[in-house]
Image (tube, rainbow, N blue to C red; front, side, top):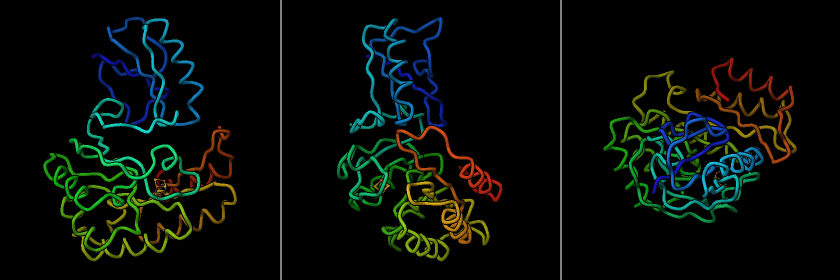
Length: 270
Ligand code: SF4
């Protein structure tokens, strides 16, 4: 079956094949059996609904879905909703972090068939059984590109044994997540393990290890967020502040934009 996919916005993970579109229908449209409008971010839901209507003028079957609409997600199909190279080998998460939709949307950990890819987008790979993690590492060791663990590794589960296994596949980048106040201690420990085991040159840790830092959630302020970012950067880890957004937030207040801009200026990302 030929499925044309439509996305409300382009990101670096958006597929680029001839059946993948961003936004409105074009003048010349390919044949397809179905159109799937896929929406990742809740703040794009209205645009996704609008696009579903627009595309239904050209195709009889138009389906609206994606994580933002609460899809639990089934087996992962490489290249379908994410650009080739990206891979998801598990869904769900056993944790209940504030502001995260994953547990309510996808439930506890579910293991998927391990397909090929090198950018691992699992919500919480380290919460999977060891046998699954090793199957993923086996798959990664067969790829021509070095792996990137961009889904966010839970630092509390990054034991010495796990670090040895992950470093054995020579990752290009790995990401931790600093979502809860207690996370920092674990990130510090994980970085110490990496520093001891990895063969990266001194002072190059930030080229390989990054950390998503949730900022701007209710109760947070710019000063506290700056402190968290500075602590992460003091470990020689690249900071990626992730601004908390609920369905209502459409714009980041200017002081938060300044904070994120300042982090980028210091070598972080947003
Ligand atoms: S560990 Fe990550 S995926 Fe799991 S609940 Fe927390 S933020 Fe969400």
